[in-house]
Image (tube, rainbow, N blue to C red):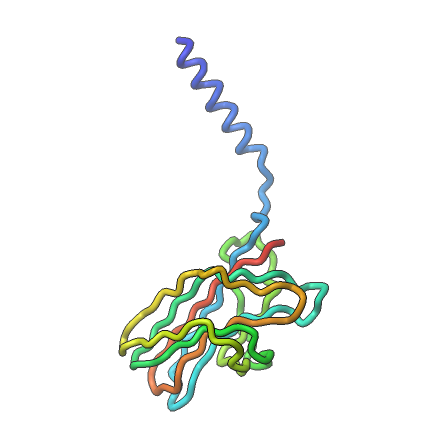
Length: 166
């Protein structure tokens, strides 16, 4: 009987603790950006870029990504290219309670090539998952992370995921 009473007290303590937690988003928010296109003889890119305003700029921690090409292609992951200006895309919060991302998303991005971190060669129809490697952007200068395909005539799908502390 003592064992049952002790178990009941533990269950109640855990339930009270869970119910007492605020219904707020976690301290670090995770976002994603996705684009797909069918370029014809051109490259295609997806960029996440920090805010130009120091007041709203947050550190960006690269969380991962994925790429698919219907034809053979080369994908590069780069950082700190010249700032993208076209075409504005959408950042999606993976937790619906999270506020909007401070980073901007650019599809068919015109960001400069920057510093290449990785280069991947894909066969036709191949998908590649990109795992995190500690890549992050600080807050002192505006920066970006870009996934870019080589010049292709086919379908390309690009996904970037990142987190921002709040």
